[in-house]
Length: 403
Image (cartoon, rainbow, N blue to C red; front, side, top):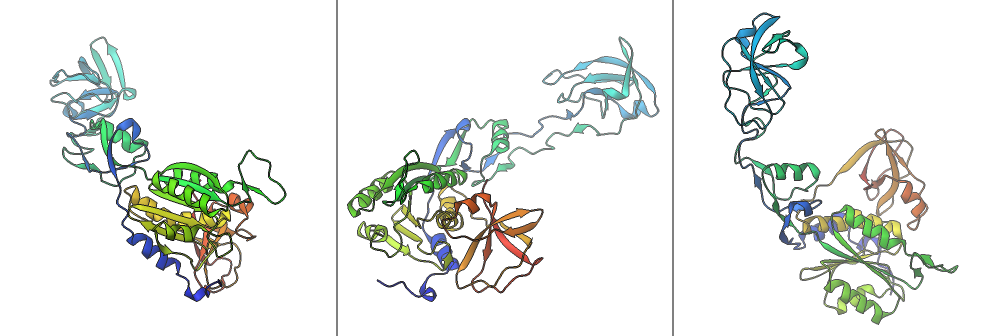
C-alpha cells in the first residue's frame, strides 16, 4: 500500500478538532483530602464562615485606642494579655493597652496595634508607646480574606498544596474530585528489549515506556506499564484487549505506519474501534492514530521517541486533560529567536529548543529518534506549515516541556 500524499493528511488543527469533540466524560469520586493531591476538584467549595472570623491582630504588640496615643512617647496602663486562640471577651478603657499576639482577636474598644519593637515596658503594669499607631493598621477586619458562602475553589481546579490547605481551613476533610484517568502504556516491536536486558547490535532498550509513563504522571494520570509486545498480530491483539479492559486510555508506541509489521491500526479496527485519526501533517509524528470505542480511547504513537513525545504533549494531552476534569488551556511561549531558520515545509514542525531569558535557541535537528537532543531541550519550537524563513530576533512560539 502506498503512502498518501501529504495534502491528503489531516492537519494538526483538524486533529485537535476531532480530539476535542470526542465525548471524554470524567468520572468523579469522593476521597480523603490527604489523597487529593494532583486531582481536580469536582464541585465548587464555599467558605463555611467569614475568614478571619473575627477582627484579628497581624502583629505581636499592644492593642490600643488611637485617641490615647495622639502624641508619643505615651505611657499606658497595661490591662492584661490576649493570646491567639483566646476566647475571652476582653476590652480596653481609655488610657489602657492590652498585650496582643499575632492571630489574636482585637479587644473591644481598640482600633490600633503597635508592634512590640516600638514599645518599652516601664513597669509590671505600664508600657511606653514609642510610635503613633494608625487606625486599622496591623489589623485584619472580619471577613477580610473571604466571606461565608464565597466560592473558594471552582470545579475543575487542580489541587496542589496551597489549595488543599485552603480546603482544610474550611473543614473539607473529604473532597469530591475527578478521578485521575487510568492510562496503560504498551510498546511494540521485535527490536525493543527491557531496560535491564543487554541489547544486541540490532536492538534498542525500551525508552518509550518510561518516557510516556513519566509524561502521564506530569499530566496527573494514573499510569500503568504494560511492557513490550512482539510484532505478532495475535500477541498485539491480546495485549491491546488487556490494556483497554484495564484502563480508560491506552498508549501504544510502534507499529503505526504502513509497513509489513505495522499491525496496530488494523487490529484496532478489527476490535471495533473507530479510527478517527490515522495520519497527520506533523513532523515528527505523521503515523499518529486516535481510535475510540465507547468510553475507551487508544492513541497509537510512532515508535521513534521524539515523535511519540511530541504527539503526546501536543495532542493526546488534550483528551487526557478533559478526562481528568480539566479545561484545555494552551500555554504558548512567545520569544525571540537566537538564530535564523529556513522556511518550513508542508508539515507543522516541532523542534527541540532551549528557552532562556526570553530567547529561543533551536537545537540541531537530527531526526525523530534523537533522544539526546530532546533531553537537552526545555521547549518545543512550533512552526506552521509553509512558514517563511525567520531571522535572529524574530518572534517565534513554542510549547514548554514539563520538567
